[in-house]
Length: 68
Image 1 (cartoon, rainbow, N blue to C red):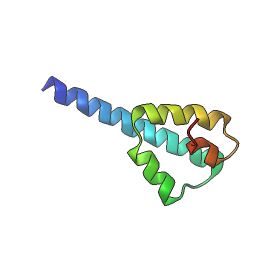
Image 2: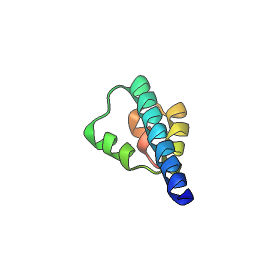
Image 3: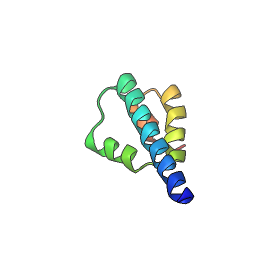
Image 4: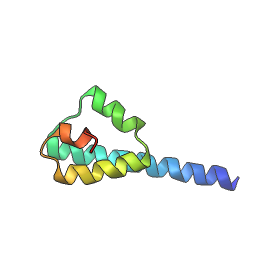
């Protein structure tokens, strides 16, 4: 039961982080196309955290999704 609760928390954290990253990208660069929306839905927590860093320094949307 405890493992299920932890898994639920992690999924909730991932969903909240994905929503925040999506909001930040849209505010900075405009609407996302279907491909980038799918990329965000499939991203892990670690990937989403890396995207938040890139949002701050990227000059365009392509740079946000480009791997370093």
